Amino acid sequence: MSSDLSGAPDRSKQTVVVTGASGGVGRAVARAYGARGASVGLIARGAEGLAAAAEDVESAGGRALSLPADTADAQAVEACAARVEDELGPIDVWVNDAFSSVFAPFEEIELDEFRRITEVCYLGFVHGTRAALDRMKPRDHGTIVQVGSALAYRGIPLQSAYCGAKHAIQGFTEALRCELLHEKSHVRVTMVQLPAVNTPQFSWVLTRLPRRAQPVPPIYQPEVVARAIVRAADHPRRREYWVGSSTAATLIANAVAPGLLDRYLARTGFASQQTSQRHTSRDPANLWAPADEHTDFGAHGHFDEQATRTDPQIWASEHHGLLAVAGAAVAGAALWLRRR
Image 1 (cartoon, rainbow, N blue to C red):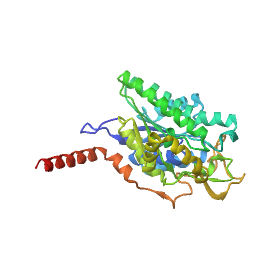
Image 2: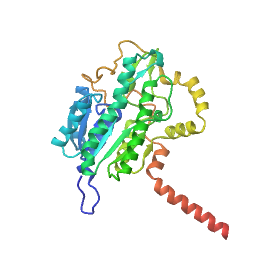
Image 3: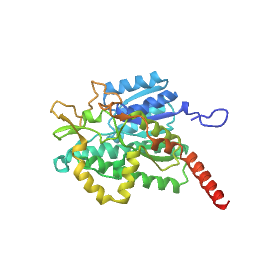
Image 4: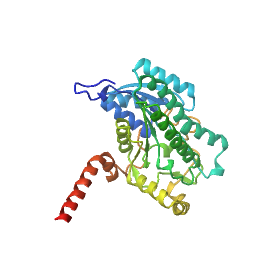
C-alpha cells in the first residue's frame, strides 16, 4: 500500500480480499472497499452473487476480481490468494467472513452437516488466515480481520455448530495474535464481534425448525457492521471490536451471570429465532451448494423494516479516544471544583 505526500497510508490503493463476498456482510464490506477505490478479490461459491458483487465494487469506484471457491478447500483458497497477488497486487487486508449454518437442535443436525459447518465457518477462516500470512509475513505488512459474533462468547440454542465454530475462531485468533506479538511482527489480526444482522442467510440457511429463521432483535443493517469491519482493518491494534449495544450487553451479561443467561435463553431462544411464517421444503439451503448460483440475494435480508442503521455504542467505539479525553476533562473539572 502506497502513502500520500503527508506520509499517511493511501487506502484507496489497497488490495483487499473478502471471503463470503457474494451476499450479506461480505457483500457490504466489498462494496465499502470499492467506494474507497480499492482492488477487491471476491471469494464465494455462487456465480450470480459473485458477478453482482463484482458489479457493486466496480460501480462504487473500485476494481473487482471474482474468485469462485469454497473456503473449506484449503488449496482453492491458496489458489485464490495467488491470483489476487498476480492480478491485483500485494494483499493489504484479508477479511474472513464466509458462513454457513443449520438451525436445529443439536441432535437433529446430522454429523456430516456439523462437520461441513465447522469446515466452512472455522477451517475456512484458518485457510484464509494461512494464505494471507504466507504473503504478509515476508513483507512484514498486512491486516487480517476475523468476522466474529457475540456468539463467539455466548452460545445460544439451535445454533450449536455455528456457535462452536465462532468460539473456535476466537481461541485460534488469540493464539495467533500472541505468536505475532512474540515475533514482533507488523502483521496484525483483529476480530469484530457482530450483533444480529439483516442478511439473506435467514432466507437460505438450512433449517429444521417449524417456522422460518430470523435474527434475534435488535437487528442491524449490513452496512453498519461493514463500516465497523473496515474501521477495524484501518485500526487493527485493538484486539477486538464489539458492534452494537446488543453485542456489548450480551458479552457483559455473559461475563457477569452466565447461568442466568443460560436460563433466559432456554426460555426465549427458540421462539425469538423464528418468524410467524411456516418453513417449507421449497425454501433454499446453501449448506452443500450455493443458494446464489442463479439468483442474486444481495446484502440485505427480509428485515429492512426492523433493522437499524444507528447505535450509540458504535459511535462510542469509533470515538473512544475522544470520550476518554472528555471523561478526563470532566474528572479534572470535578476535582478542581472540589478543591475550590
